[in-house]
Image (cartoon, rainbow, N blue to C red; front, top):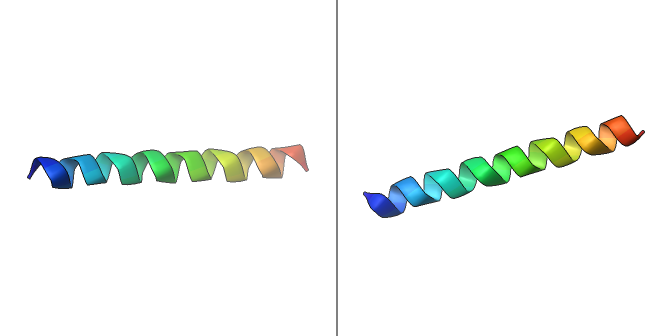
Length: 29
């Protein structure tokens, strides 16, 4: 159970980072 929760948190953090990076690149252009 705890492993699944940790994995979900990691995935959420990764998704947020990717979204922010993509937004930053678009904004830079």
